[in-house]
Image (cartoon, rainbow, N blue to C red):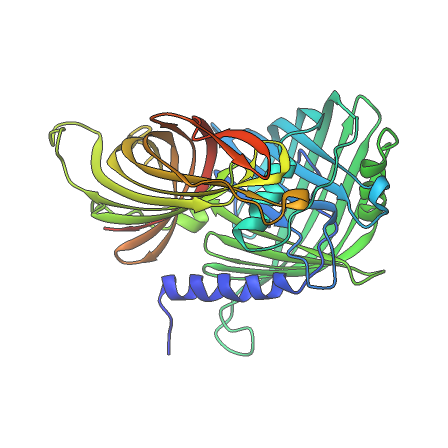
Length: 469
């Protein structure tokens, strides 16, 4: 029986999470380059998440988490933000360490060919790479508590540096067999994809990658299988960076699949059992398909907040209360819940059991009439927030009193149309900033330690919206 677009998407996501849960992720992509994606798709926006998804007999080590956000600016410019968390956990207690990197890149497409049977592009750009403490511990431990996993109290090394960098990325896709009317590969195009890139910092760090893949494509699907080789050198200022570079400086086999806006990939090292995976969502002309002229009636949103790691589930009913039909802004009634157990600041021994319910209004509009796949949004609301400190590490088993407060909320950002799921439903991607302000703070005691909770805060918001038209 044929599946609907939404059912297929949920099926693929579930299957991939099961596959990734059985892998030991020890490496990642080159920080500062656009994420790994076949040239059959040219994304206007993409969100990449690489995580260890470690099995029960493995541990967090090396590049344990990586997030890449990229966006096309005008026709030929691309911006990339990379945040990587690196740890050395599988060492003696006194020798363990962690470090984060954050890379901001801006690139220009020097050459591009898109003829259907062939896609070729060459990009070059500049970047700033920073090494230090960029809340990686909070993000990693917050994710662990969100899924009920153990947390890690690993100290940061003393390395702090900022270096300019230059980079390039060249890709080529060639279709050599067009879809035919019969046989095992009925309806599938066959081709190959070659990719090579490098980033060099002023401090002498050199990152490189090259790969060659066979690609099969059919409507919303791309499937690829191939080999890749990563190179790393110049990482001598920090033992965590050095060990991570040595682990990534190896050949591997890559298997990936794209279904509409969803991209999944696993990379298996050829000299060990180590592997890593990516989960990405993209918005591009190839994934969006034909736009609908019907207005949005309602939607459901699933998002994550970082570095204050909490989940957010929201629903909107589009109805005008304070605006008229003559305005270009849409208006919606908003209800949402938030929850999680984020780390309390930079203290890995304390976590904040957080729950919140709120109601409000949201306004949104197209950026321009020509760009109908990108919208601004802004919302305001009020609700009730509960916070309680829970102890870990030396404070394990201790907890504070639970404190409830009224809370005011603001949120703003962008919404990207990503894919058509059915005749009346679409998948959209969100990227924004949220802020909250409780009516007052509170000083609590947990195991003899005093701390202040219910303070104002802000986080980045990333996630997904399923809309009904």
